[in-house]
Image (tube, rainbow, N blue to C red):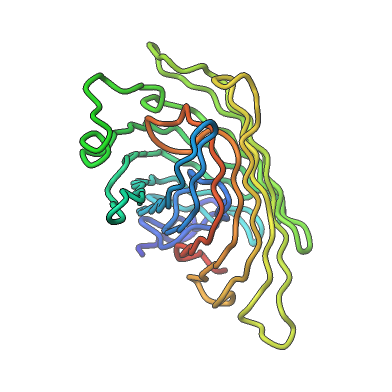
Length: 274
């Protein structure tokens, strides 16, 4: 990390490590390292599937300005790949393969007004591509939907309380020519309880709710509970049991109404620990 001497009361860092903005880890589209093993039930279908979404993400802040002990800002970028694998019972054997892959690249700006109030501005491009395994297995010969190919501007307010984190997001699809409706509203929060006899462990629970104009404002809901390990380090790990109901949260198959239930392992990025 390269730092300059204080400039007008600010400490400027170039290419700093980590980030001070907390992860919205129950958001399926959060930029984080995660792997999940979930039961996959599609409304109107009887086939039971195993769903394995994996997210791989890279974050890099370009500039961070620490203006005071309680106020700072940073700007940078994120790149995340959301790969989704499915496993089906083909009768004689179980068959698995890549179902879809989503790609998202974001420019980001974070501002910490005080330790309990943070803001985030994000402009991202996303594209979605169905996997060859899925195309061959399902004899798909026509183009798939392009509703997951778009650009969006998001504004996030994040509030910290004792034992609680709460956030709200307003998003707008800014693509000039789009087949997707424009508005996203999102609300979520999580509760944490450090274990007094094990300072590195904490109990977790929370929810994430997304409401898209594209699906007539019917909410997509994910709830989860679990435990966080290595809490006092820069890279804690979360093990969660979660339930999701709504439109499939990834892929060109987003039109499916699903229920996803199972375990998720989430690895945090390095934090900027003051």
